[in-house]
Image (cartoon, rainbow, N blue to C red; front, side, top):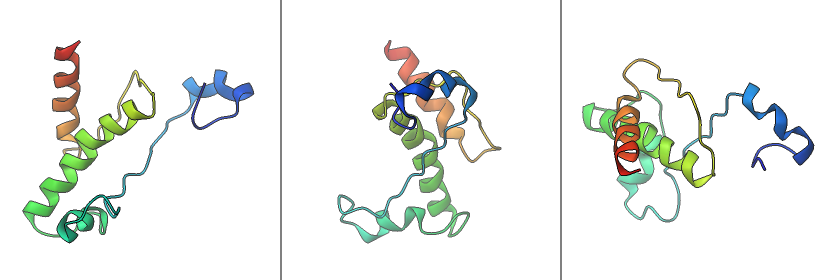
Length: 95
């Protein structure tokens, strides 16, 4: 069963590229500095950029896992998702 498609369309899931959006501006993040991570793309200083890359790389893989999705392929655009490789390696080593 897909979280994104009606049951009669799930057979088409392999043809789609899913890209869930991550938002740090949620109540669970009580620190305003944490909530600002997703305010502006490519904005801020080096520390903010590092936080964004961690969120996209590690958080993205974990978000897909929570959604029950197991991608066969991950799209990695330049260095923006360098932490994706680390998270994938970490999760593969645990299995």
